[in-house]
Image (tube, rainbow, N blue to C red; front, side, top):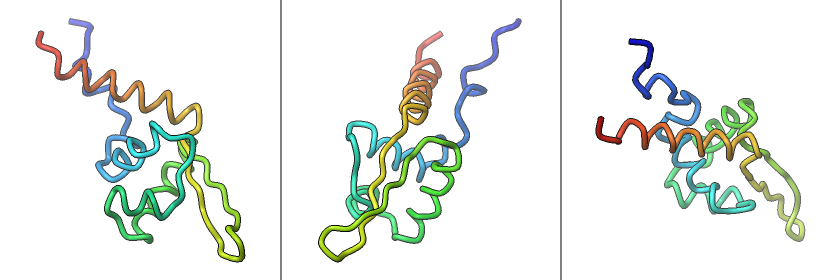
Length: 100
């Protein structure tokens, strides 16, 4: 038997529940402010920051820093590679859930 179970194709970066939540939150958006993502996925700022670093290092998220007035802000967006990885991840989940 040459076919492996689909679980072997799960992306370990995205598969971690916190990172999956972040990527899923960003998927329908062009860009989101850090605070919005923090609140949407119910994480503390330090926890979100740590997971964003992992996703950014993998090339899945782009981080943009700037200001709104005099207040610093951080925006997060999926990169094309991140969108492709998320789509592939969802495909693998569908393959796992599909009756054999």
